[in-house]
Image 1 (cartoon, one colour):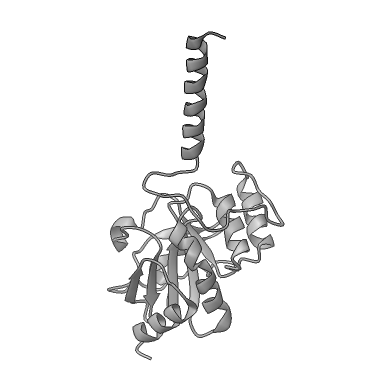
Image 2 (cartoon, rainbow, N blue to C red):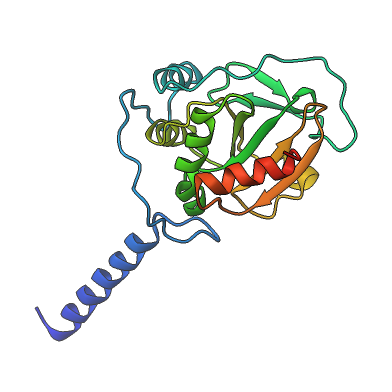
Length: 211
């Protein structure tokens, strides 16, 4: 091998390493340092059919989405948009939802979402006065989203907003983004950013509901 061939080989190797280091990045998203997604008890591929996704969601123990309601939209409430349940078997009209309810926008590629997931799961499982609803937001891979929900014991209902239709009506600048809905369906508190503990979630909810 002459000197020119050796230099070319070195350049190709360096390019390969560089591309490998960028392969798992999305625009504006840094490397996630929390635990990576691993295979679940009901693995699904990115090409999974809706039937496969629904089966995986049920196998993960994720609750069914709320039934579609004809309740009227309220001033200061959620936008009058309809989203699919994660997996696509049913739909939910957001404006008809009533609380008290915590609504959390998240994605499996979002590092702060990963960091707060255990706190939200603990909140959902340790009380029954406030419902919890997840919205898998701007996430290109529902299969990984279901696996991540299973790994973090996020068994509360999950909707999907892959096209981030909520960005404009809710003013979502980034995720995680959490809303608190009162019994009349009004948004009474917003939490942009990560919850750092179960107590953080509990205190925010209590303050938002005036307790």
